Amino acid sequence: MPEQSKIWLSSPHMGGEEQKFVKEAFDTNWIAPLGPNVTLFEEAISNYIKDDVYVAALSSGTGAIHLALELLGVTAGDEVICQSFTFSASANPIMYLGASPIFVDSESETWNISPVLLRKAIVDRIASGKKPKAIVAVHLYGMPYKISEVRTIATEFNIPIIEDSAEALGSTYKGGKCGSFGDIGILSFNGNKIITTSGGGALLTKDKNSKDKAVFLATQARDEAPHYQHSNVGYNYRMSNVLAGIGRGQMLVLDERVAARRANYQFYYDNLSTISELEFLIEPEGYFSNRWLSCILTPSYEVREKIRLSLEKENIESRPLWKPMHLQPIFSDKPSYVDGTSEDLFLRGLCLPSGSNLEQKDLERVVNIIKSQLL
Ligand SMILES: *Cc1c(COP(=O)(O)O)cnc(C)c1O
Image (cartoon, rainbow, N blue to C red):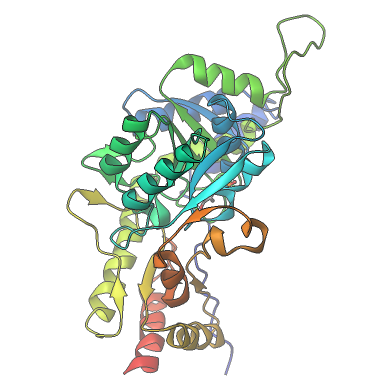
């Protein structure tokens, strides 16, 4: 029997107009970084998010977090609070600056940063002599974090929030778009995200000055002079005009992509939630997730592995939930405020195929294999 076709976790899904915008870049020879596609892509994002955000298109979400930290004045020796349950790119840029991440565990309702542990961490760090310079909060898998609770704490202690919205473009909280809630927000257009430029990211700021400063740093920090003159360390983080053409095309289909991913989740929920061993991440009142990845919680590590391996055998890619940062070898010496929540999610949870280009028969294949392992 021929092997069944591969089902990916989350693969790129072009809309059709991308090549037209890329061709414009070629036809006008705007192959360099910067150019009309970059400006128009930034405008499209800003119109989508609203709330008067200023958008700087960059080469990656990781670079956007790096610049966000720098804009907030984070330097060597500083401490920055970071959600532990996330992808390493949320934390790595803290290290680039010689600062230290302080990891905070999740709560079980949204799987994101726990307001209770966040407060505890801030109080404890201040007591030990260092006030954290920023809070990196993440909308994991597209589910918004507890935005008003986290904002209340940030305001009380006067600490800015970097909103890692890499996985949550298209998600909303009480009607507002994710990306608009932090003092600075970031997006990612990596190949596996809800829309992609093959690689890319964006920084979202509340004022034009901050955007201009980010763009200045992202383009090698050139002072105004006919020669190359530098008073700051700069980076090469700007998005290319060719890739921004892909982004313009992808913005046209973003809402369709959100609808398709939410339909995947609904299919899994409708077909698997009756199995008493399985749990789903339900949207609390007022939360709207783009369902970037659909996830299930199994009863144990053993059951999770049984399901994952049986899918793998049938040429279907699934993946354990993110391994928390406080359990990563590279961060093992960093302070953490944890209660076991994210470790438990990591051990029992599995991300199922979630691409917006999955077909009904693909979803059925996944569901049937999971059922065969549990019923
Ligand atoms: C993808 C991702 C990033 C990094 O984005 P890149 O564009 O891949 O650099 C940051 N944070 C989270 C939570 C992500 O999932």
